[in-house]
Amino acid sequence: MIRKVVQKVVQKGYLSCKMEEEIRQMFEAGCNLEDIDALIDLQYAVMSGQVKRESISAKNRWLAS
Image (cartoon, rainbow, N blue to C red; front, side):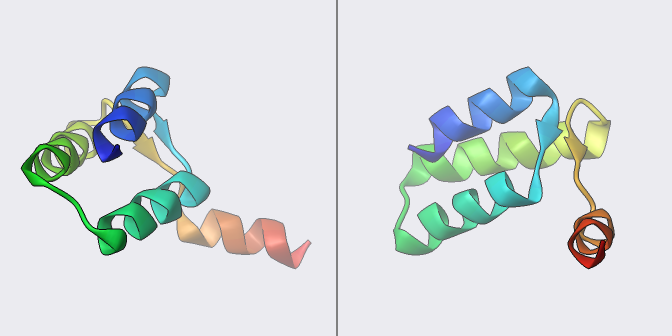
């Protein structure tokens, strides 16, 4: 299940705080090796710049306004 979400994130090239939280909740609910591999792929995509990650500070600025 995490794999499908990660594929969508990589295709969009953007990881929102909301999507990151959904992935975290799925992970905490239980995952398998395929999910772990997907998370590693996502980490590499973020590190390489292929996926941009929404900053928490940007989200906090939005909530404050």
